[in-house]
Length: 538
Image (tube, rainbow, N blue to C red; front, top):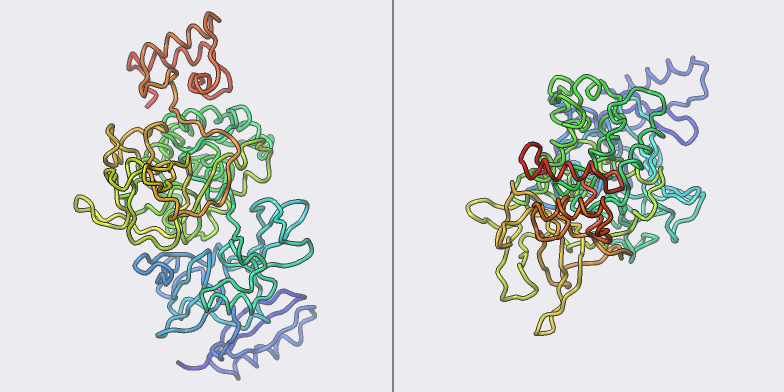
């Protein structure tokens, strides 16, 4: 490969490659012309392909052959190659060159890139993304785009092992480093020895919370979040709170997580796609043709329904679907982010919404765990026993279909059970709906929180968050908890409204069909319409 030369601009701590030349003479000539400009920016010439010990990989916005994204070979999870782009995240950690490909770490994945799609420079001459803490929060400041800018998002609350006023480097969002070279050495060796939290990885709660949960926020509180963000501006997300809650309860998809995705995808309901097509989630808006590829809906609420039912419940959360990588937002290592977006920080951005607005006791409610490592094959048991039927085996062929292999899969833990032989098991909320006998998955079935769960040995799971409230197990309208919506539920809501028998606890939650935080005649009517088949809840 012929040697190329970069013209590098520097201003303060910021550096940027402004042009690349085939010869040193051409680069030097360009540098000489810059000397006559009155500017505080300094310029230098650097060899593009010189040996770099501790480097940064700059990703192009488009591939060398004109695609609107870059593809990579997945070194962390071979066979599960992916895509990303410098439009959303410019820099990655340089780990070396192998078989002619540039190896880098970004968004939790070790990636091999075509050398024509990237530029490698020494870290001392590069703009580098980093984390910092301020005012009780953790922030991610990342470098992106052809315009070479920084953007910043809140990604959690302040962590005890991080100090204000310091930059922390991380390309997986779990382990943080004060020294960039030490981080590179750890990545190259597959360890976290030099991280400030080497034995305590960070998992952003909302980024790793399964969609198979419910929010404690009411429809009115969700409306308030939207109004606080958009103010008097026109937005298709205004007054959608009741639909986020309704379809959460109907299809088992967390309304607050849907809110974060829609806010990120639709610029809080103000994007052209949202305004013209009532599409709040970017459905069909591929990088190469976003507007004309985007789906259109009759109403904005229809897009929420479609997202909950088809895109998430029967799509990304179906563990036999090629897009399945877990039921959480995630990053490029796991979760919905893997296949939903080229933006490697898509999951982090959607989760970020919940750290800017008051979410009360919603934060930290669920006990969460990580199923350890690359799971080429693991069994999901019907009951807490090795002799129990296996509902599904991830990573193996079942009925002619091979399930995706997951990487550090995040799950919600409902309970801990000890079997007769003394083995300990976790009861896990299933990502995929199960059939009525709980013996197999039912990808297009209606999700039922109280029925759709499985068991896995505790030795396979590391707990990352200890929940603080009882996990609700219900679906909308099933007031008496018998697994269906019938006239018995209709009568219970009627009696509650008439105060002949007042509901409480989970029954009261199940009776709030429209998700407005109270039980009224509106819920009564929805149950009635469901039973009559004029407007079914699911």
